[in-house]
Length: 195
Image 1 (cartoon, one colour):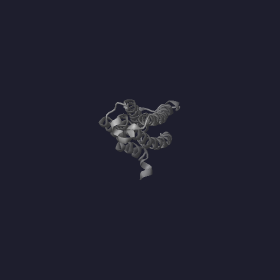
Image 2 (cartoon, one colour):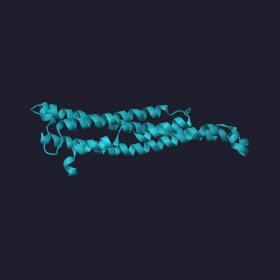
Image 3 (spheres, one colour):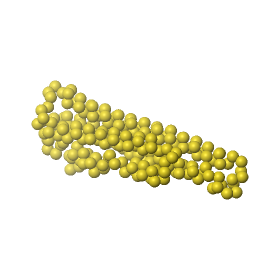
Image 4 (cartoon, one colour):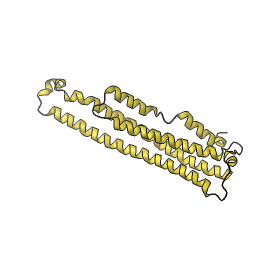
């Protein structure tokens, strides 16, 4: 069982790498969302001729400005879709790690009993702790990916400032990835390295 736990710890190192990538993507996605929100909030002002003052007489100025903003918004939306694809790749990678973790059990010559699955050797985690931790981390990231996808879909030209603010806050908070729970899982899995 001790060798199996070491193999699971290697899988958790891969998970940690994926989570580091996730954090980088999170920063990028929030910046993209903020930029898209700024343009969406600016569009009504740019569409109103009263806001141009003396420049209202310049032929085609309003249309050019609106066109440029829509072009920028389209570019940001494309970037956001790419970022969401990268989030999805991480979710799929975590799912594969969970599958591989389950295969470790099935691939052994002797199937562990429930007692062996729950058995801890010293401060090492049990096999059950490892499996549960992998599953939890995958589920958290899958749920958060779905929230991010939904927030992106909710981002429309008709979104109000308060809607955009609420969506932005939802993305910043990452409600489905509680930091304390993630840290707790890693503390259990790598207890001997902490001591």
